[in-house]
Length: 415
Ligand code: ATP
Ligand code: MG
Image: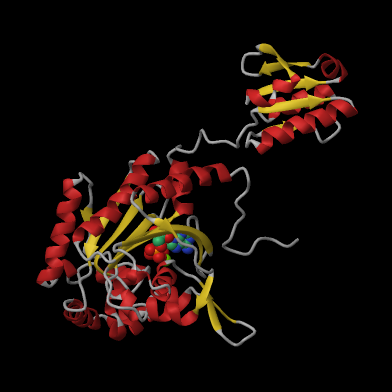
């Protein structure tokens, strides 16, 4: 027996309605905010991620699916969406488009992680990138967009956590403070964080190890050490959220797992789905376009984990009433001529986009009606020699059993 690889899973037809429901609302909301969809390749040059995401991050250090292709190139299955979108923004000269440029994506993501509930090796992110707007109202707009999605999905119990992690002007001093703070207890840090202490001490705050977390509990807060520009920006973000009535808490220890962020970072956290509670995360990344070879371009975005959204919504019973689509009409047919006529009517209706079923199993009338009932057909007709001869069929509404005679030649126009 060959089984699905560890950390991956099949999304079965019975599960797709929930996916469609969530993703349609997400896409629709993105469009209402003026975002257009992009598709980028599943694999990219490995360097895109080591340079873009940062080589002291968990994602790059531990989680990438990297391989050499037959031409000797090092390629990596994308472990996040932003770097590829930024590459495309630069490569396709999108800087010359009217600004801001608003792009969304819906893509599978690959990370070699320990499989847990809500943590997979292949998962789906829907996200956005907004290029060209430096002001706090761009941050507010993308955060508000997540709120719009949650509201439209009926979700009320997810908490927004925000922070500012400063910029290249103020973060180096803060990093120095962290360095001296953690150096006193270096032996208590996990091995990965020992390495990070010199190269990127901010990363220690994002470590998942219990000891590192305890050690970080009383470390200096970045919000006490922002430069005036970052502090002002953060105040404006908070004021903008207040103005829209969007609730948040400030957590000065949220730093995000990817290196490219600057100023605003945020996470949306569910408390109902266990320890993998972050359903959406993002922030501002004013330096990334330049790091990847473009002109300096302010940018802000987020990514939403769809599997975790599903888990959250399931746990709140918000997906209970979703089911597979039901046929508008089931045409039961008996006899060679009648079966051909049924196929012809079904063909015409399906060409109009109407969901119709008819028998292709050579079942008896009785078995056909049993099946029509099982799949929840809204209407049925029975088509045999008598109906062919009279040119009339009985159209039956299954919900209440009402029957209406209809001319065979008019059935297609009834739907
Ligand atoms: P975590 O702290 O849970 O590892 P992260 O900081 O690595 O999350 P991001 O890189 O910000 O996550 O990705 C954005 C979103 O993608 C997360 O908020 C989460 O909903 C989802 N996500 C991240 N990793 C996984 C995974 N391995 N499986 C399923 N969903 C994931
Ligand atoms: Mg992670």
